Length: 80
Image 1: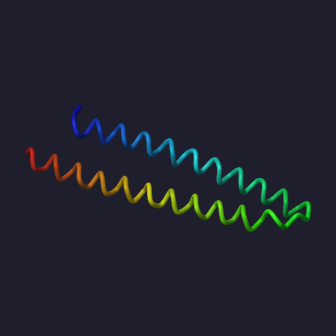
Image 2: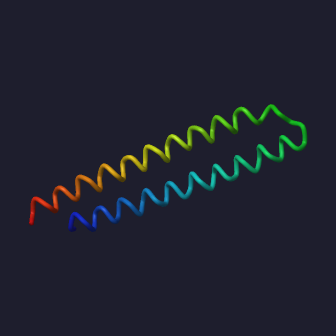
């Protein structure tokens, strides 16, 4: 399997993970908005904490994608 194809497979898998975490964040936003409107403020802090954790996960995945892309570019430049 070529290095570029491995990078594409890795990027696709990470994109699926990011999409999943974004969907969970949207769900957390919906739940916290409904809780706020109904006066149940006990769920707001855990929802914000969970969303913050998912934000950091997405940022780490993005950083990982950039690092792997940079390494693949260097490997392909060495081959040429």
